[in-house]
Image (cartoon, rainbow, N blue to C red; front, side, top):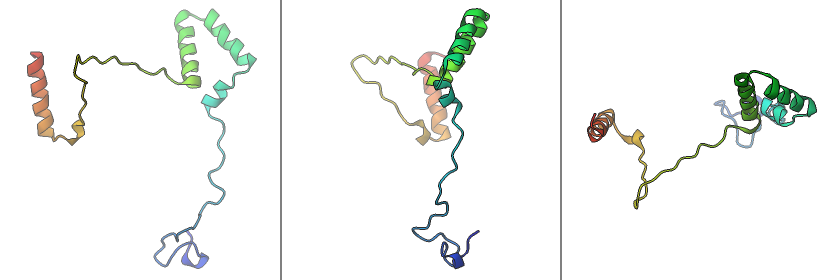
Amino acid sequence: MATEKDGKRDAAGKILPGTVLNPDGRPKKEPSLCIKIREFDEVYQQRLHEIALTAEPRDSTAAIKLLWSYAHGQPAQRMILEGGDTPIQTQNLDKLSVEQLEQLEQIRKAAEGE
């Protein structure tokens, strides 16, 4: 650990304003799997094509989905919300106490006839 003698910390050990402890920044990482898959060359494309055409349907579908999700991410989930003439409102339930959440659950069950 640096000390106040090297000019980077004060007597209490706190880093002084304007001090950079790692001037070179983070070490460079290896390219991620996502980047590698996005950079398919013809060999990878050909192998993917072979898997899709020759493997068992379940295996080929799984392989294609996995590779596609690594390369491009999962597709966005779409939701259709219908509230009639009034907009659908959301609430932050994190602000409720445990007792209030239990009451809310009882109300929900009663409304659904459970």
